[in-house]
Length: 335
Image (cartoon, rainbow, N blue to C red; front, side):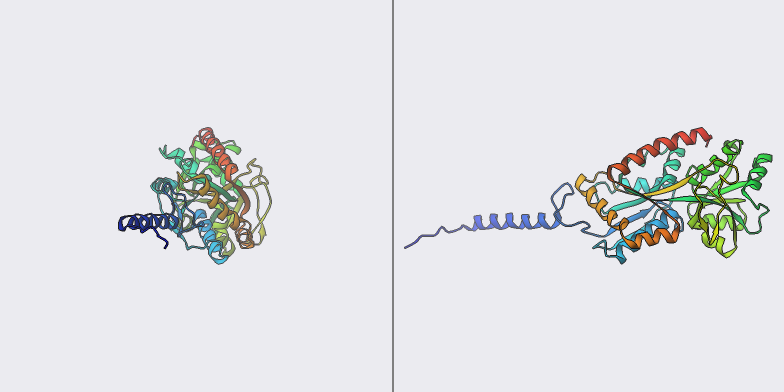
């Protein structure tokens, strides 16, 4: 006769509890944010730290569309807007998502300048860099009824009376403001005399330009291309030295007009601070898939965005270097 050990009620309960805990940890992930589940394990949220209608907004929503239409993300991708402070409000909110790899944020050159100008206690480096995405030349535009026919007309009016020319674009200290400063400096005038109106989003900037609240509008080419094509705005110049067509016609450049400026705005995506190295790699792999897709190439071509992809350590170094460079540029231009 064979005797088999009998499990006591207490031992059975302990074993069941251990199994339950093991199953729970396997489903939800171990403490500290690591998880055995494939990324993403829940909805991915992309914050646009500005109003709808601008460059960050269009880039974030393009990412969303490609991730979902190409089934790159196995979970829903949500985009939402947080306005204020040239991105400072959104960046501060991202700090509250520390350790969550599903919380992403659009950013770029604009934010670095805005944070520096506002003396923000939170820096772009207080996030987890994932990748730089695109670069885009800036466009100088005026309403169709404007007296300014060329960018030289604008510069000459500014040199005669700086108060007579008001420029408008994204947040003060951002890329739009910086490129105006570079133009005025290249023309031999004083950038600190610039009158500049900063708008919280591309939609507001477009309305301000068309209504005549500002004399000259400045922003990424894609934000104005529709109005240029319809004839509501006149394109005076683009900021890149490289030639390109805008609304079907060759665009004049600042260099062609005699101003030594070659400037491109870049955009990037970062994650919440405090995520692990493994989670950073998982988020980066997701964005890598977007970047290598034909759908994303089509988006870039449609919007006139130059491919400016850097990821991982390269993206981190670039953003750190740009933070230093832009700070120096702001001081140099007196902005």
